[in-house]
Amino acid sequence: MIERSDLLAFHFYKKEKFTGSYCGMRYLIEKTTEGEAELFAVYTWPQPYNFEATLQEDKCRKTFPFTAESLEEITDYLNRIYENGYHKKQPNAEKGTRTLTP
Image (cartoon, rainbow, N blue to C red; front, side, top):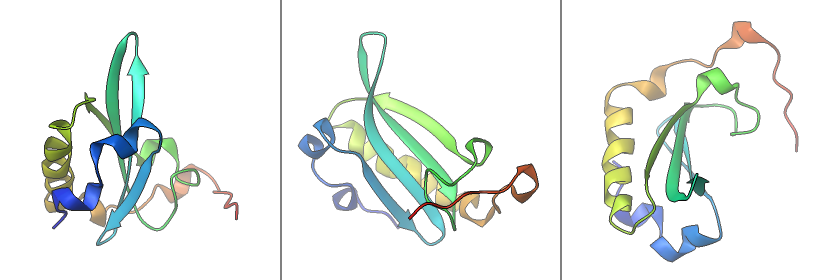
């Protein structure tokens, strides 16, 4: 299970994005803006590829307000995604060849 402490401190996200994985599920959390709103963008996708090498259709995106309190909601969201079996879905291999970069 992903714990709130696994996602680092709120101030980290003001300048950096964070990537992690849990039992076959990968995720990325970053600060973004839509219009004038500051948000967390949370992406999840199944292994084995990194974010850049994963096809867009294999990723899920959800946004949350950019607040310290949202990190608890993000923790719950990631655990729900895992519990619902998202990590067991295989990447969409038929849609093309992935190019892996070092």
